[in-house]
Length: 439
Ligand code: 4AD
Ligand code: MG
Image (cartoon, rainbow, N blue to C red; front, top):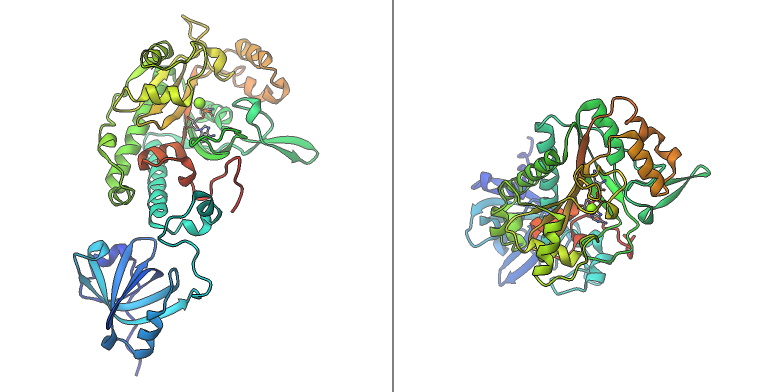
């Protein structure tokens, strides 16, 4: 006779749908408590935590003995009956009947990350394991939702995804932060931004976006800078600065709403106070660079007119608003070569930076682009950029040029803000910074 079919494997997040049923749960040992004839292993499987109860008399003797000695992060499977238990994490526990060990972590060489406090260097060095901790899982789940919401927003609004190359012949955002690579005897650079290519696809598709990794050889050691980060960059034919700002605020509002709707338990795991996020409703305030400088000075900041805002200036300014603020029309000379000058004040660029609240700094940078061939050519020369490398980019101004614009949103900065965490290094699975290329 065929033996009874083994009960199904379930994901912990679905435990509540199986109350009263016999199931199997597999994962890693998160914690183990012993109390007389009872063992309380807590399993994690990436979708949640679940406590099992092993009653000595309910499981084979050898199984109970083996389970008693299990160490953190050993992989295993538990068979048992799901039952509601308000005091257990997740609200359900597993009344265990059997336990099978896949890989027991040896006690003499234990898992290096324990519930005690570790220094950040140690954790970064063990990033491949640190990712398993509840806080890191919550952050990565929120990152996933941010990216989903971004794609959903553009896809539902008629934007076509058209990705830009990563190996490029020239700079987009200034030559001081280029990573150079040897390219069959020539020089190539890792892309700093897909924008120039998105301008080409916008002329083909109307509304387009690219979304990929971008690279900056940033010498800065701030909590907001990575050398490799992910950026989503919409680009829209016929868009002017006001359209760019409107698109930016709609995108950010959508992302925040979506994370609040889908990530409550992850935000709670991070002890994120969600009140400031609930405020993020349209429209976002818009102020000019001139007004920003006045406000920063009035609040005790010392920035000089004509320079870019520093991280500290951004924080002073953002503190004055209960939602992201958009600062537009910076002095052209502190901004990128491709930005359209303001017709009324040509010393200003038609650009915008969106600053997140609570001191999270610039999350979006964008602009209207120069669409005039001669003006663009002059800017490329003034900045000593190699004109040959930009021949194709100038072509966009030779064949049916139109005003257009777009922006880039840095995913890690947005995730850091929404999670309420100090440093962007925890918002990407394997961060790359000036000091870190490992693991
Ligand atoms: O302001 P940035 O440099 O703008 C551009 O690259 C434009 N070409 C985008 C466009 O118009 N299509 O960068 C855009 C955003 C910043 O606001 C910030 O969120 C993020 O990218 N960012 C970084 N994030 C992490 N580490 C860094 N080193 C970053 N540099 C920029
Ligand atoms: Mg910027």
